[in-house]
Length: 227
Length: 335
Picture 1 (cartoon, one colour):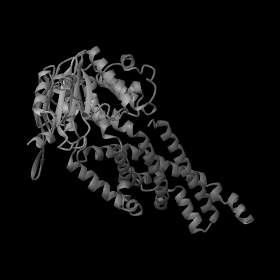
Picture 2 (cartoon, helix red, strand yellow; picture 1 turned 60 degrees about the horizontal axis):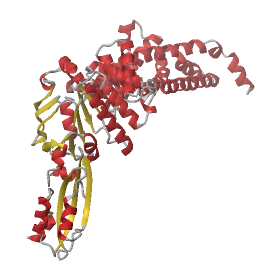
Picture 3 (cartoon, rainbow over the protein chains, first blue to last red; picture 1 turned 180 degrees about the horizontal axis):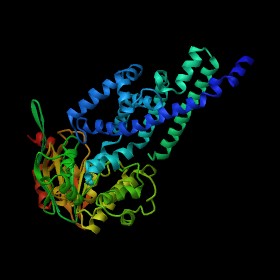
């Protein structure tokens, strides 16, 4: 037991590599999270409004984006997706190594996931509110930006929380093929060199991180929820 | 003034057509309330959605002060819509906005500045008796208060017409009365043409000047309230002066007849006069008295004992100003 404590405080993987690794993980999750909301929110809105009977019903667009793009991306396991995206990542950011490069595949994996959550959130808005918006003379764009999205905001924030938590999980995997971060630290030292103290510390940090994200997310939901 | 002319809504399905609205024509002048009564499935929702252009009607026109809403689309339609305020059954307020923010929404669309919006919203909330609640959120209000906000919001763009879709169906009787009185007061104050679609007879009795009966997408009866109620044997008269079912009397005991009597203040009902004339108390099986437009409408189901000649009793009732006839079962018994 004493040995374990000694390792814990003296292992350079913990004393020196831990903080940079955490920084890389935060960078990956932050970048990918931001990009996911940026692309996923509009995609989710488009999926919602183009569905049959929607505000801007369009079967072709709906099937192409929902049935083809989103469903196919979502059916590819992330481990396979991130490897197969290496050439694309290299083309976009010039390298396939590092947290920024890892954000590319993380974003591509989580955008369709988040877009579906957005679509579901918008579906929960009572259709009578959309009728009211129309009856008062809103354009379709106004109906989306002034009514649908604000009315779905608590649910949208909860979806962002869920997505960020999923991203933390994916980021550990992305670390294995050059993304860096806590995932790689745990794999290299905890698994390959069999240093259980490293594994334990990484686990504790990941659990704390997820708890924190969930806590903040829930607090924001309570703040914006007036229902 | 709103005029709806030959409004039709046809849903085409692979092997048949559903005529949800089959040529509805009605007109509501300014400063009056028209009620459209219909049971579920009659086409009430379709009618509201077609008049408000939430669903485009298959044919027919909806004119507000001479401007045909069905003839315009996109921007001109959105502008023309401001002349029509829509009140929903569930109020359909935006939960993410405060009460004042809800009322200000149509003003925001109309392009008013922040200060102007706030002032107008406050004025409208005062009009519906919620002047102190502007900062609250809809979830903090009762159903009746929410509907008041819905009405204030519908009035934000100073419309000429208020279209109310089951405005009180989600409310308890006391609140229903308050909301109807509010609508009546606003109508008088703002000179609104109010069109109320409902299944509640009490709504019609309380505030409507005229009424129509919607059945299978058609207006089967229509007219000023007093006239329609006074039309003996009409569906609306029977719905508005509803009688409870009574057991079939023994045919040996006599024949049942129905009497409809419009009794002005201070006058004696024909039934009382005729009873005295024949020297018998005619047993009333069921009866209702409803005061509408200053006239007390008496509708009674009466047993004429077999000792009396039914036709003579009916003739006497008619002589004294009542309308009377055998009920369906009474007529059968006589045949």
